[in-house]
Length: 322
Ligand code: ACO
Image (tube, rainbow, N blue to C red; front, side):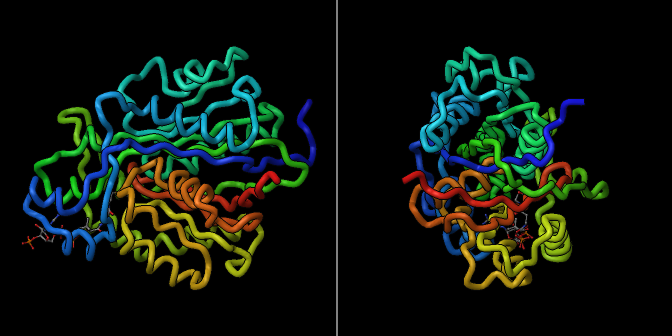
């Protein structure tokens, strides 16, 4: 057997992309019976980006990946694995990862994998890329989350359309002598399987908001603690909290329950709304490129939602190339 001993992966760059069009709560209140005060108090969301006719899961994933590769100083042809998490790609084949590889001119032919575990998709994609690098199946991987939730939203349903946004985030992973990404802690909640869904007919985003909220408030903390435990760390070691950006009313109590006061907390839901699989990498990349993300510290990633799947890992944030 030829499996490299003592080898891990690490994040070496971040990138993101969002459509130009920004939809505010005030503008939404001219479309459905809602208002800025209701949306802000219940969700924390102020704005979201909405895909235009030329934007797609593939185009946004490609731009986010291009930016991440530039950030890492890696040529597209050095990438040997592309993993894309999305719940809104329109075609079953060709799959998005292959289209991103083609759009970026990866003539070396990287392995392309699409993942659909909705809001926890990025953490599943990260786990897959990390384990491919650990076992020697890849040396450099792109891990991307990209979504056009606006295209499957019911814009007459005020209980769901106010939540969603579009965008993409990406991370580049390289080989590390010491593992800088922990083993994933993952699972699902079978009795909530249909609580967040995009079924075929009609193809529209639906959710049971109260059931999800109850699970997030009562169960998510234990799963997040399990992620840190699996990494062999304590919550004191964690410097960054990056949870699925569903709702500030879920993120804040979770951070408090985990003793996260004074730590860096990703709160991009305020600007971007809920972008499902894109939400964690989008939030991390925006913080990184704004120069806000602490360098070289353990960051707790935790996603949950559609399916009903959850997953998380601790990743070391990159340090800047100087
Ligand atoms: N504007 C004004 N009023 C509204 C709106 C709106 N946009 N949406 C719903 N309402 C009204 C309802 O009609 C209802 O009115 P009624 O009492 O007269 O019948 C009232 O507000 C309460 O409605 P609920 O649906 O019970 O609202 P709730 O307090 O549960 O808040 C929310 C809804 C914010 C979605 C909440 O359930 C929640 O935070 N859920 C967590 C799930 C989540 O974040 N999902 C995101 C996608 S899934 C994921 O990413 C994991």
